[in-house]
Length: 201
Image (cartoon, rainbow, N blue to C red; front, top):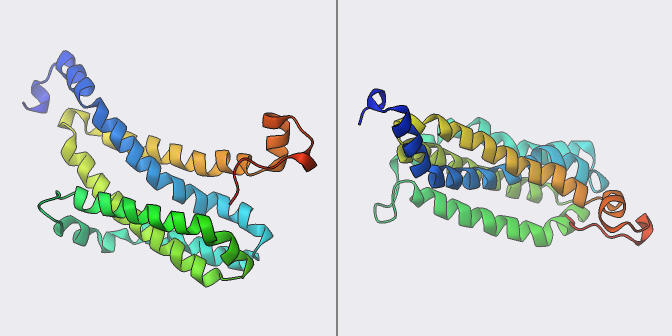
């Protein structure tokens, strides 16, 4: 049915029918926003006790793949496994790789920073952001295909909402729960010297 032929009632019905798809998009974009917010906002604050500003700047360059994703977007668009699906061929493996790298960083990033292995951390973070850009390309294309034309504008809304949620969790929430002062005052109500933050690096 053409977009101009839909009545307001039909548009509302189509919105309700595809609401679960929009929720899925928000979740996928949130996963992208988590590391993006961490590297762009949390890294300069959390890493300053380990590194100089020059070293922090070196690690912050890991977000460059987002600026150049147009270079490999045709590759993501044209190559896939038919048995898995055009978009799932990229979304699922990229999500798994992202989780593996984050799991490794979770266990080792503090040790690497204390040993001043800045280049290693920068390379890992750059690879991670490259993976995120590949997923972003696939999800953007999937959003166009999976939603009815009358709901097309909600694809970009899902991206904005999802990435903002992810970035908020990895910046404001993470930094707050990483702070002894915040946890002491707002959560535990104990003296700072007796308080351990809920989250660590």
